[in-house]
Length: 266
Image (cartoon, rainbow, N blue to C red; front, side):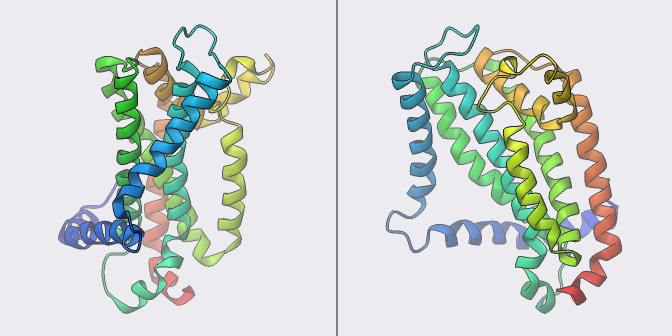
């Protein structure tokens, strides 16, 4: 999927990628009194709010799930994983525009920029999801070894988000409406995915349409692992995985074809 010369270029500039990720993380909290603690407090507050409101105040329950925190875990599983997807797409669609000065002034493999976006998003997600995992352990809702099944599911999610972000990022340089359209589309996409509601509440004639939404299988797999403690149906993830690979291949080819023209447009 990635040509050997591109891989060699990425490896040669690994220090640049790692340094950029570190600088962005530090810059986010450098002027804050509590510094990097905000990276813990913000997601912790979200988990507490979801747990208190939906489990303790509203007593929300999921059909077939006996746990008091069933709906809270369902909601966090969906919202946190969608957040990783949305961050990569949002940052990816603007990465070449935001780094226009760097692209014009410094000679480096431009493909490093989407990689930096992905690593930054994964660093943020690791902190948030780590806290959520601690909550699962503390509330005796940790799913056990099946938790590790999240890794291939998240790999599909990251590939899908990277493919969309890269394609949108290149197109957005030439057609700025692409970024505006995708931002609106992502809002609709969130609500068309069973994240805050179970698919079972949808009308019978609407449920078959969910098969056309690749994120339904990805989010559903995460929710199955974390809420029910069972491995996902891997066959349902196959279409999303194939689409993710195709988008990444298309994004790389589009990038290689248009990378020279992007400098002029920027």
